Length: 422
Ligand code: PEP
Ligand code: MN
Image (tube, rainbow, N blue to C red):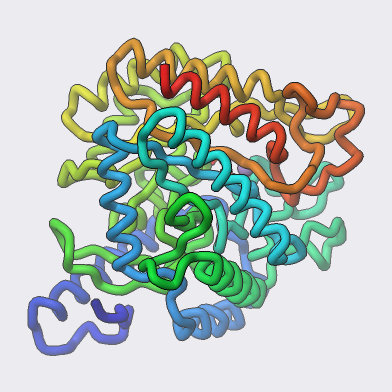
């Protein structure tokens, strides 16, 4: 594996590796020439390019060997032999990137994994939304006050002033440094005699939404280990494409196609079985079990009707994807006080619907994807001890979407364990 010198080394003598570099550089350039949704307009393009050049010199955060190991684990999930548990903050923030916060989140994931593995007797693959989850897609370009929307700490600041909301490319460097600190913490928490990052309960892999292309293209190396030459991203083990950037003719899907990292794709309530199949063919052309995770986020009232024909069609095609339920993003609403929230019962019901679909079809309900923190926040309502709408302002701290707190997550884990074991 060599660092891809893109696009500088296009006229080196042709060997197999150099030919692969050239092919990939061309395909990457084609991908990036397509329309890319949700990208910031940097006020000073030259400065942004300088930052990108600096990012390219930083050491990768994860290794191709770790990514390959996750690929094997996800193949097991796709075959029905393991469970995928993914979770963490909606948006990491510079302020919350403390050891205490990241430890609390990892502890919550580890506890959930522990319950799930004990109740189902299946291994749990734990993937944190961590070490790079700093860029956010937004439904609207401006907020209620008419200011440019907050797009994650990697792009601008949540502070409601025009200056703070102006995209600043130097934030990509800060995000990258923050991600490196987080990775170092995860590795420190792991056992030094084991390869790769571990925390209590097993390996912990890191993931984020591959959204901001200036950042995502800054750590790519040629990977010849798979069925075709691909690019291994050093920025996270698992990367996903979000609901707002999954245009079939857009840059994000074309970029994801090139990666050797296992990839996820969010699919919302308007996804048709035909579209799902088109994504699967694009993103898993070699029919590799677990290469693609389809992350359904339909909303609890739609999941049963919308997901079933999708699972049916994809399964009939012979592709073995990981089916993962994100019960958060289709169930968001604005409370009377104006705070975005989600009801525990709706979250729980979407998971129940996801399991019903898979039980009906005999397929494996292999994955859960949550926005969750180990901190005692009051962001989602409900659950046995959970806050009511009136309590939301007490500890509402999220930089973006509302997260389940540790108690709500634990209660949900028992519901999931019951469904998965049953
Ligand atoms: C997210 O996972 O935080 C997110 C923005 O999800 P989606 O793309 O499904 O809306
Ligand atoms: Mn979110």
